[in-house]
Amino acid sequence: MTTATTGHKMWAGFKRSHGTIVILVPSTDIELSHSGISLQQPSEVPTDLLRFVDSNISRLRRRAKIDGTSPVPAGVEKKLRRLLAHCASPSAVFPAVSSTERGGAHLYWRAGAQSIEVLMENVQEFYVRIVSHTGLTTFEQEGVGDLPSAEIGTALADLSDRVARANPEWRSLFSL
Image (cartoon, rainbow, N blue to C red; front, side, top):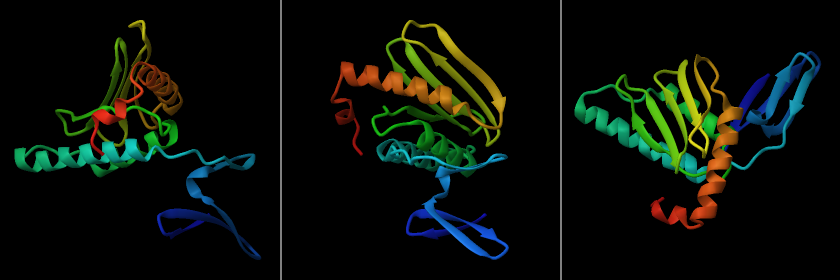
């Protein structure tokens, strides 16, 4: 597979022995598997959420320079952006964003007793904890590798729906 960038989108092409076939879809919507190629319907990107998280991670980097502490690694920021782009909708609520003692990133959403916690110390290690609206931990995982995006996405959609029902104007609390 070869890739090319036009504007802000990355496109994918598959090279055959007798020429090149270019598939005009963003490469993030292509999944390769043993059974072939799966093209998924592109989802809407949560641009406000991504902008909010980017802004807060930039703030943490500036603060780390002043404090002389470890900044959030670029790889961690990239992995969190990819996670949010794939599992969050444009209506997703914004998390609290902070740095960890070891220079990683901590995303935390809370609405009443319900919460989602995503902690990444480096590009491989993560910790995820999801607590339901009843206060019970429904998912907890410490691991290496891929973040559990399906679980995070489901919990974030539920938490965001609850927030929107309780306060439809919640976005007005944030300056974007």
